[in-house]
Length: 496
Image (cartoon, rainbow, N blue to C red; front, side):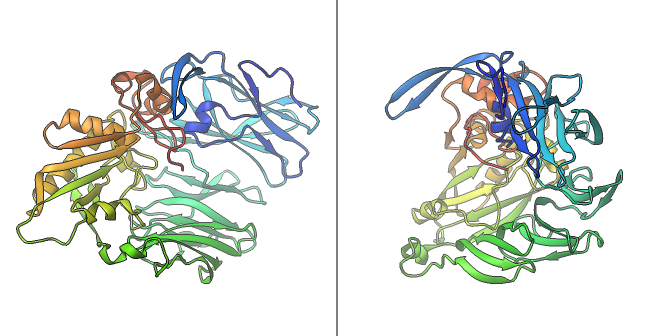
């Protein structure tokens, strides 16, 4: 279908940054009627080459890799539309500026138009392009702009309707909410100081949308519905007290819902469009024979609370303690993440066995979500803009000081642990607040500074200007667009 590929030129693939930091895994898109296919072409020639060591069980190998660091040249991206045999190729007009991101590509349901999301290098501007597949000519359908001290998060929470209108998640109000774009006009379908986290399904016949969000509690993710004709009349479909995720069939008649809470590991069930459970897929009841059953008797309650940041914003924490003995003081295992995007760690979901294992051995387990974390709105997340390694450390310190104020905590024995961006945070917490923590574990924090740079790529461009910066040079880091990775530079960490 294509010619000219090879060497630094690739067809039908997502470039490195798109895969690792934008959550776009593909580089080709078939039209619904299979009359056309849109194909990405990218050329890595401008990207600098770095030497990378891969350490494995069988030894260490050294590789030369095209590795885009913040402020350095990006790949050159083009998009073509062609017939299945490769004929009739039309180059899509992506504009005159080559230094952009090809963020998302979608066909309209009738296959007559291609929709392309073009994002600026500084991630402050996103334009939805409407493309004629026969000619490649594009026009700007609408534009999203960030605030001055902010950036645009990419999202997959959108849906093109058969009538040509678009359901679209936007943070323009300060919180991720759903809108309908029709005939050049916007209608806000959900509103409030809470966040729509995903669009799960659309029933076009009934004009009903199904989505995940935290309308009732920032620590819970619930499933909701709203009718397009009745904006902001929202129905909750799942039970209070759980963290839920869901997928829906194309007919919008059934859900597969996964849920958990601090006492119950993940359950999966089939539900109808009202949220009514029809049958268990995996009840996962902790009864005799379940792997966790032998430890159930010592399972301790997870407690939740809040503190105030220096600017007055609310910080949520969670804590698990052993059965407390009068007069006894306990060491603390203080876990953190700290970065935006996938950064929320305090939820009413199942935390895994590790916290309870530590508590069984006499530790207090503690976490707090600092400013910069996701699912709290842009004002809360934007605190990290051009300020990486500052407000997060400050808020984690507030958590540590709170712990030290408790009569059952041994203040000289607080150990902190973080993975990926949390690994970077461990290092910054030791550097900026010496003496507060007795020990720190920095997991996946990178074995060499060059390994940091791809994770810093979009984030430093977005939040620290177009240069490698102090954080990159000292081995600190920031995550990408969706994964929010930092010094870990781990291409398999996290998700949307």
